[in-house]
Each structure stands twice: as C-alpha cells, then as structure tokens.
Image 1 (cartoon, rainbow, N blue to C red):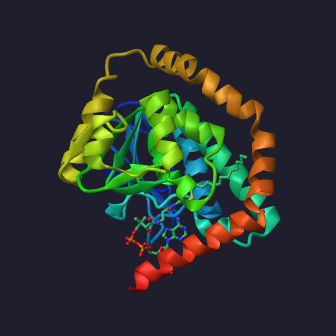
Image 2 (cartoon, rainbow, N blue to C red):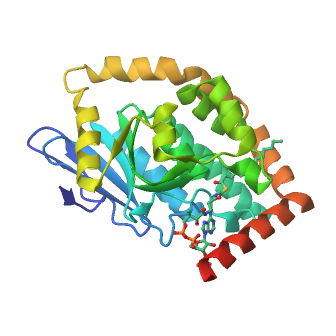
Length: 280
Ligand SMILES: CCCCCCCC/C=C\C=C\CC(=O)SCCNC(=O)CCNC(=O)[C@H](O)C(C)(C)COP(=O)(O)OP(=O)(O)OC[C@H]1O[C@@H](n2cnc3c(N)ncnc32)[C@H](O)[C@@H]1OP(=O)(O)O
C-alpha cells in the first residue's frame, strides 16, 4: 500500500488509477493490487469534523469517484477514536457565514459518501458518536473494534438530528430501533451495536479489521461495477433525493435552530463538561 500525491495521477498496470492526497487532515492510501482506497481521518485529538476536514473528505470522495476506485475503507489514524462527530466549536458562538459553509460542506460530504458508486466500508477503530456515526452509517458495511461506542447522541446535547441523519440510521436498523435510539440519544457499545445490526462485524485489532473490510469489498470482485452501482443508486435514491430537495431548508433550520439561545446554552454546557472530563 502506498501513499501518493494526489496531483500525480497515473494508470497502474492493472488499469486502475492510483492516487492519494497529500493533505493535513485526511490521507489516502491506495492498494496497488486491488485498487481499494483507504481514507484515514487524522485530525487530532479526536477527529472532530470541522469545515476544513469536511472539505478534504468531500474533495477526496470526488477524486476517488473520478479515478474509479474499486472500493473505500474509511477509518481513523487515531486508534481509539473514529470521529467525535461534528466539531462543536463550529456550532458554539458561531460566525454565521462560516456556520453556513460548514453545514453545506457536511451536506456535500454526506451526499458524496452516501451515493458513491464504489463499495464502502467503515472500519470503526474507535468511538463514533453523532457525526462520526453518520459517516459510518453512510458506508455499506461496518466493522468495529471491541470496547467502543457508536450512536446518534444529539438529543443528549439538546439538539435535534436532522432528517437525513435519521434516515441514514433508519435505513440500517429500521424505524423502531431508530426511534428508540434517537429519542434517548443512545450510544451503543460494540456488542450492542452488533446485536441490532448497526454494525456488521466485531474485530480485535486493525489488522483483522483491514482484512474483514477487504473481504467485504472482495465480494464485489466478480459483480459488474455498473450493475452494482446502479442497484445501490436505486436503493438509496429516495433518501438522497429527499435530502437534496430539502437542503436549503435544512441549512436554514440548522442556522435558525443552532443559534437559538437555549441551544447555545446546551452546547456551551456540553463543551464545558467535555473539557472538565479531559482535565480530571
Ligand atoms: C427543527 C429541526 C432542526 C434541525 C437542526 C439541526 C441541528 C443539528 C445540529 C447538529 C448535529 C450535530 C451532530 C454532532 O456530531 S454534535 C457532536 C457530538 N459529539 C459528541 O458528543 C462527542 C463528544 N466527545 C466525546 O464523547 C469524547 O471526546 C470522545 C470522542 C469519546 C473521546 O474521548 P477522549 O479520548 O477521552 O477525549 P476527550 O473527551 O478528553 O476530548 C479531547 C478534547 O477534544 C474535545 N472534543 C471532544 N469532542 C469534541 C467535539 N465533538 N467537538 C469539539 N471538541 C471536542 C474535548 O473537549 C477535549 O478538548 P480539550 O483537550 O481542549 O479539553
């Protein structure tokens, strides 16, 4: 597996374009033999998703699509944390113009990941709350380390998960489990997530995780890519169209709702509790 500069596109002897990104907040490694790209989130300390990392994920997904990658493994360089979700600092006492750009970039990233033509696996090698969970749910398969947690915990923060977050979960675990999980803002331990089908496999370590993710992607080796991609597109069409149709309204809701004093108070208190915990 090699890390390459994105600017250097080349056709490999297997006929697969190979590339990766020389960037700060994500890195991409492409397996020469299989054409599978591993996208690593690497924004210390907890891979919280701010405007900059989302922009990099989004542009990387565009590049992977253009370069006809054969599959994606989405994971974290920071073992122990897949992603802490959206960077709360983007929502707390926000600059409204940046806040809009942030949300629009999150929408773009989700659309690209949710609708990508290539098969995708989240190798969840650490905790995955909220936006971290959303990224994982947007993939087609989820492999997770033991002793971690995953879930959409928004209500615990006093915020409301948008419709497309909810649909992403509902499409994986169904209406009843989603309603129960989201109204409580419940975080699931690995084994619990497995038992409700939120994740597909549990692994001991990174080596095993990469092997299981690769095994999932290998299932498509003999499936004509076009047929596969069109089938995925049809299955996900309604969810994506709903979001795209409502994205302006979704942005408006985010700004209006997110800037309300009561929501700001919740976010401020939550941030304080996180900071206290890290100082204890
Ligand atoms: C009517 C309809 C309206 C629709 C409107 C839509 C509104 C929806 C809006 C938003 C949706 C948001 C979804 C989200 O993703 S919100 C983010 C939720 N994330 C979390 O709750 C996770 C919080 N973090 C943790 O639980 C832990 O940090 C954990 C990831 C488990 C890692 O734990 P640990 O390794 O122990 O690390 P620390 O807790 O010590 O954290 C290290 C430092 O990082 C800071 N931190 C952590 N998470 C975040 C974050 N998400 N954003 C910003 N900063 C974060 C933490 O404060 C520590 O900072 P410091 O070192 O300065 O103390």
